[in-house]
Amino acid sequence: MKKVLKQVLGIDVAQKELVVTLGRLLDDLSEELYAYKVFKNSEAGMKLLVDWVKKLSDSTVGVHYVMEATGVYHQKFAYYLSEHGHQLSIILPNKISNYMRSLEVKTITDKTCSEAIARFGLGRKLDNWEKPKKVYRSLQQLTRERDQIVNERSAVKNQLHAEKSEAYPYEKSLDRLKARIAFLNAQEKESKKDISEIVCEDRDLKEDVKIMCTMPGVGELTAVIVLAETNGFELIRSKKQLASYAGFDVKEKQSGTSVKGKPKISKKGNRHLRKAMYLPSLSAVKWDERFKAIYARILARNGIKMKGLVAVQRKMLEMMYTLFQNKTAYDKKYLEKENSVQIQDQYAITS
Image (cartoon, rainbow, N blue to C red):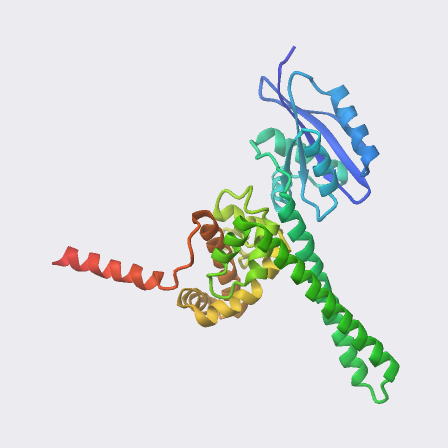
């Protein structure tokens, strides 16, 4: 009888369902998918799922649960597994979709997705997911709430502008729209106050935010969003991984001389991070020589302003990670010092 080396449960998460496939890696390095089932995405369904896995798996080898990050629908089950001591990894959607293409899966269903996730887990060593610290979880909820408020206010303002532009606007409608804007302004103010209070209560968090705010264009809200959405960079191991998590990784299609697609960012990451970096990038390009040079170089290459800004956004996010890791403030004159050292080195070589 073949020995089981590894067991993985691949989970495709939907709003109401958990579609799972149980697989194992045997001692001859062959992979076997041997069980499939659908459970409700509820606490009762989660308990039934864990019991089902326990019955079908080898008790001497732990089961590694692997799921795809799907908006907010995966979070409840992730917390359930973490609180009950199960090994869990959460994978970015772009990694799973790229892996599925390598399997040449022609029919995309919940079942084939769970099978691909199970195979992905069997073939790789994955980092264990850790439950976000309470402070980061609270900040994530607050920053996302504020973002929803701002989006709603923009929609109401547009509606008010349209109503005012009519030939005979109805005054009571205008009054109600103005009242909604005032209400949303007050709500945004409350949420920002709550964010500031949480930051001030945590000394380490306050220091981290202060360091990140030394970058041009980065304010307290931007720093908080970055920390909240990355759980304090808990599972980030490199700048490349951070760029992929945010959806700033570049994808390009090229084959021979006939097929050459334009390179573009994947956008298959955390959209809240990408959105948070937009306004800071505008300020950085205007006031900082380092980012101004990056923007100018990209713009000179392809003439597209947005590509230059995206390059700056990625660089800024990576630099915020570096500042956080090193616990050092941003040095605006770093380029001048670097150039000065290079000139001195060249002079020493030639003399």
